[in-house]
Length: 541
Ligand SMILES: O=P(O)(O)OC[C@H]1O[C@](O)(CO)[C@@H](O)[C@@H]1O
Image 1 (spheres, rainbow, N blue to C red):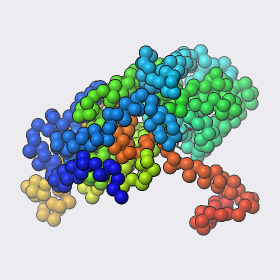
Image 2 (cartoon, helix red, strand yellow):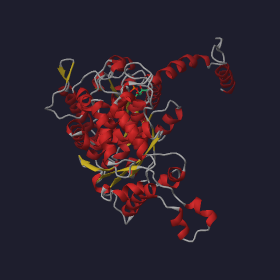
Image 3 (cartoon, helix red, strand yellow):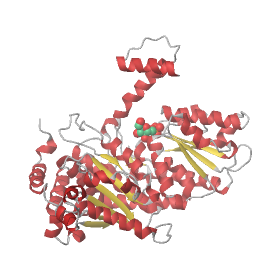
Image 4 (cartoon, protein in one colour):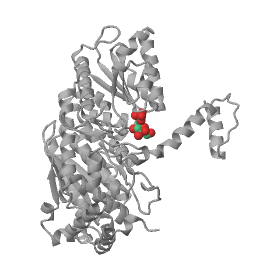
């Protein structure tokens, strides 16, 4: 049965257009339209997007925008910003944009303006951060806090880690920041091996406060702290704070709810890095820089909400993703930041993009008849050039790339920045234009070697430029990808804000835990493979 999406006339026009341009080389596109490097660009909120090295023409972009209009992208954007319950399967509004709205804004959820609550939590976080950073918040023995350990996983870890790394330049170097996420005890052991419990503050970050990895690590942290401080339970409130939507479970865990920083069910885990989940970020960079980050997010939000679709950065990026996923059949997108501070950005994006758009059921409950979310991956340049770029240049798969680069370095030493920038420019040029067999032969290459040394090119990429890494730019970049993900989900008619796909494994793991005990008498009722692996593990313990 054809789906509503693929029956749209706009979809059909795109399919027809795709047949016409699928084999057109970027060399020809640039020859036919020598100014496309200037025209197929957009600049907004301090980000410059050059999408001219994509396998598109102005006509393609018009057709993609036509599809976005047909899918009512503008209406769906407004629905998100105004608190409609667009997370259908969980019956929730999706309002990460409210977290970064200014004090005077109004965003209604169930008849209540949530902005005063958002700012009350931000103010509470700022006061707390000032006390810790200023040395007024003392540990149990009277020593000031010098180590912060964020205990969380998924959205309660990836955003904080990524933001800490991204904004390290702005961070207080007197504070040691650590992040524990994996239930593998090695993560906890290595993160705390050199820390003095008397100077250590644990942030237990969990929206639900039920996540087994986080609760296991938090319990271990409690034991570690008490062991180091003579077992006095009175130490807990001075060394533990919680970030959660679940006051009841925070309290049951033994953390004073006065030391809990709240957020709400309309903030998805992977959209929460600027909620209370950002406490570690605020501790590292301070409340002023944190506000600058929120303002950066907000500027991109405003752009997304108000700019015409043809000049709307997240819309254009989202529609390009649809183009590559559904027409070229691309399976992955590489995100390649030429900025060392963004080294964890691809890992962060993996959750944002794949937990959001890894869905095969439409909002109407039907199986989709087209591909949805692509696989996102990447590494900072130039490191990736010396490992996996070979496959992007000469492999058999088409991998659209997002290059992210900056005009200035926060560490301007010698000619590093020019060399870095020359590389990012060279990569997108080489990918697009390649090197023909004739060009290779003309260099005197022996005939048998020519095919190996030729580059067919026609590999698409987008380049995003910003001035210099800063809290505001980070906010803009994250918001850009968040909104691009949403645009894709609108076209595909999937719920980008639930994550039922992670549930089954959680339930099965809970069942298996008691079965791992070698003394367990319970009959193993799994498949023969799982049964045998459990028996093996029992004997290996
Ligand atoms: O913050 P919590 O509730 O511990 O959840 C952590 C992560 O687990 C998930 O629910 C997936 O299992 C993510 O969506 C979330 O970011």
